[in-house]
Image 1 (tube, rainbow, N blue to C red):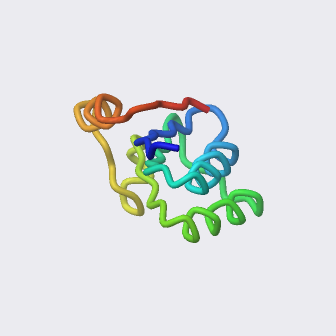
Image 2: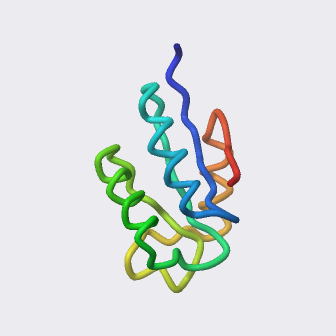
Image 3: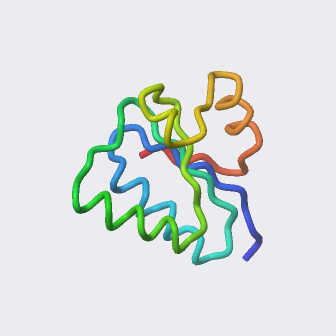
Length: 92
């Protein structure tokens, strides 16, 4: 299978977006994850998925200003560039 650059946009379900992003690395894909719409909730389920991201070497990014102190903050131009650079975009 050919390695793809996949961008996962966590828009509606951050927990599921983290799970999908981590899972896609199993196939050797280069995966980026961008949290959108609101800050990620502080839940046990999200903490577990965050551990999977670490194991998968995925460093999440965000478009949510409130998360900008902890994650790389993408403006509209940077998000657009990330989308244009991806072979596939998954919106969750």
